[in-house]
Amino acid sequence: MADTAVSAQGISKRYRLGAGSEPFGTLQEAVARAARRPARLLRRADTRADRDLLWALKDVSFQVDHGEVVGIIGRNGAGKTTLLKILSRITDPTEGRAEIRGRVSSLLEVGTGFHPELTGRENVFLNGAILGMARTEIVRQFDDVVSFAEVARFIDTPVKRYSTGMRVRLAFAVAAHLQPEILIVDEVLAVGDLAFQRKCLGKMGDVASGGRTVLFVSHNMQAVRSLCPRVLLLDGGRLVEDGPAAAVVSRYTELARQVQITPETAVGSERHRRGSGAVRFAGVALLNALDTPQHEFSMGQSIRIRLDFAVLEDVDELFVAVALKSGWTADVLTSVRHRVSDRRLCRGVTGSVVLELPDPAIRPGRYPLYLWLGDGFAHAYDVVDDLTAPLTIVTDADFDRLGFDPSSHSGFVSVPSRVVSAELRPAPS
Image (cartoon, rainbow, N blue to C red; front, side, top):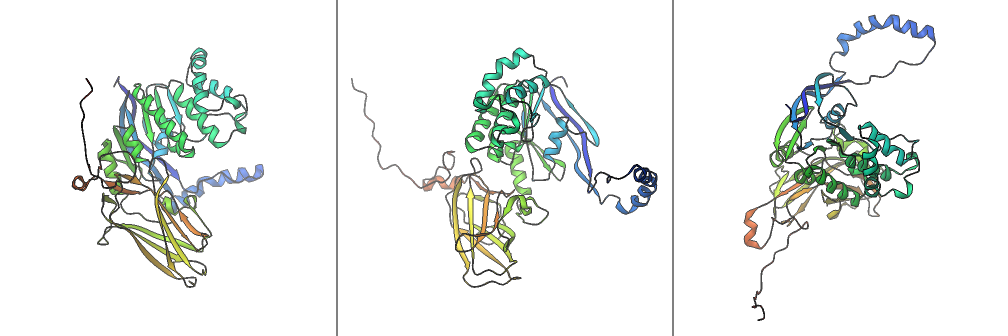
């Protein structure tokens, strides 16, 4: 137990859906509401029962030793952020307990722990003091924090005037540089630009190699596998897997195999969608060449993408586009665009289209999908981004004989190659 940094014992967190504060009113109305409350609660107890309760976490138990780097993965709504908030002492569990042994620094949301009226300089010292650091320690790290965040010009400006990117950079720099014994990082890095994301991942690698404990939540499976030897998988608020990164990521892939777009899923929410709404995606499925649902493909295996849609307003034509993005940089790897209909589609029409990528030589990795519906002038009807179940390509040793090098981590595509000639010359005497 002496080497344990984080201990979670039967943690559960319950929320009541629709719970809110009492309406404002006069003192007489407040007294009347208080008098009626016990009877009202008794009457509503049987009708509401458990249907208004949401268990964001249920009986989660694990231990993390000092110096471990642990990834926490799961689909949106699995309970990852709730767990980190409990471990960071931002919220209390409904049941169970969490014990933390060490100085904790958390980065869960943009500008977490910052006072908007204070300057960047003042917030650095405030956060260091909250972590229990002496002023001399903070002074020693201050220049490194400012340099990493690239906000030297604005360090004496109130944080409320910072852009989102500036707040993210400074928040991460503070969290990573002020010598925490336990660093807790949620998927807030997705807010930053590409160069900043790479910089942060490199810094987390340095923190991990320095022997400090790191808990890292991300949907970027490549980052998780490269940084975290051990991974926890949450699903539906429960811990369903705890083990080596490769095995747990594979289990996550199985759970996310069926890609769906519904109002209940993250990709069905408006946060991930934009466009006029004249035509909307109704479903997505990844298929093999036999039209069998499949999520994980070997290099060179044909990939089919079935897209279901519903026409909600009359449109003159319909095009569909699909892009595969890099899971590491979010850059577009490749995209295809095709006409679905060149005639007028009336409201109420539904349909589907299947696109195929024949024998793509995409290297192993996980590639988020970008889906687009629109007209011939590139006006978008519906755009879906950040699917929680990306396309997965795995290594196939059979490609060695074809000249592919699937083991290489450089680039996104493999092209056949062969050695035409090779010559060795002796060193001059």
